[in-house]
Image 1 (cartoon, rainbow, N blue to C red):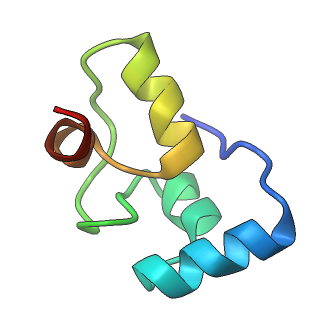
Image 2: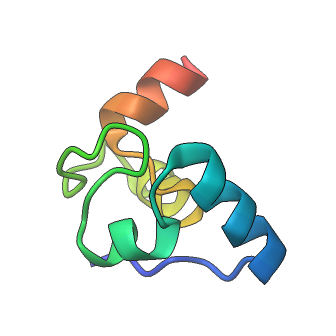
Length: 66
């Protein structure tokens, strides 16, 4: 299971207000901060690491970064 990376409290507050979901809570429950879908399968270690930073599932990462 991924663990959320540390962010300054002000950044986490901004992200929560922007996405409407708490990044740390969604990562703890293996869900996606953007689509609320399941976030338990990643294409590689870099994508898994990105999830711990952003809270985005593989599909959302592909949509944003591709």
